[in-house]
Length: 64
Image (cartoon, rainbow, N blue to C red; front, side, top):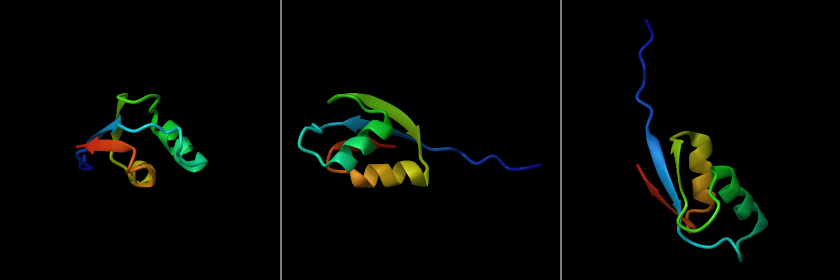
């Protein structure tokens, strides 16, 4: 029987505007599902999501 691994979730909050951000950073924020300042989303902790967060780490706040 396969063991189930505990999946960690991340609470991601947009805390800075994307107005003066580079186009690829705007797409990363959109890919995370964030729309406006203060918007929060919950995502699974995967390498793909971590990569998006690393690109826009100055725009978001992450809580585990």
